[in-house]
Length: 467
Image (cartoon, rainbow, N blue to C red; front, side):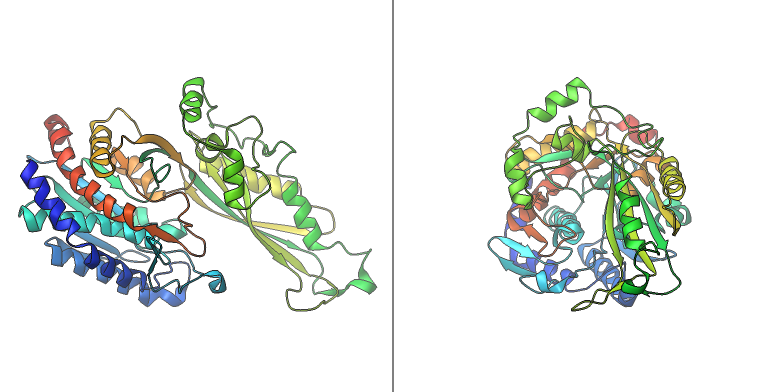
């Protein structure tokens, strides 16, 4: 076994430059799911992955959905082996504003031990980690210790609106014993981690309308309510001075932080002042009396993600604008029902509409929070693989982000899941100058290669037979 491992690792270590070239080529495809102008790029990106899986030795194809296609791959159908589904996404966030990037967002530029580019870590680089690890096994050993299903979707960054319908359409293709998701981060550069908590997500679009057209602020100021002012007051009314959300039923189903979890969190090295400085803010902010890490991972939030209205050009245009708009989102935890939260916030906004304006609210998104059980043998296997790949035992953390398919796999297939990503907290996902540490990228490939062996040994046969 040691010689076999060394052969796989030698293959990986001798292929670093090729892996980088592949990641650069993938970054170069602007697969922005939020922008319809990139529809052809989406299919081009999916085809890139299908072709790569075929070159490795997987049976692969494009699977149609109502939106962006799935890139699907399969290897093995041995009933004596566990079947593991690897999930990732090839779509990326918009790269704007372009002028804040130090290098072009769709080129993949290597500097200072990192590769910079949109999607480098979220999630193209982490998808390629698995493809490289699968290739290493097949090139060196000629086989895999487990059956593999690869599913790479193209709509994760817009909430995976077609995902569940596509799962239903192709239901039999994704029957597995376990799902692996590598779309998360470790705790720190020197602290590998496994994610055991993922927050849910709901969105709202709010429009406040005043006069039928922009008005001269000198003639009409003082007699017509300004929609921007009304919207700002409405948003401010959502929380109190302690950063607690005031919407009735918002916290329904959100668990409190128990003593055991509090102790576990406080064992992690964390400097609040240093974190604030790194983020460029005078101080951290949020729900009072709750540790910042707990606020990020295990408590719900309600945020304004964008607000606009009135004149935005150079100089001044003295008007009372006819409308103002905002985008809101909530991150959910525990047993919070996204439908309950979605309706509660909408009712609150409509009920608290300021006098003199009209308020309209559109809502979308019903992603639930998911907790990953730590006692599953696959979690133990992932811990061993991370120790082998990075030389240290991982800690257990949560993620403040949301991964809609995690909830889908849990609800539709009842799949146990392992969230084993290797990004760093400062990788600037969704922001200008997104990066992926080369140390993490190459270490992640080795970790995934070891993970497949660990899963083959640790997943009990009785689970496979009961599938």
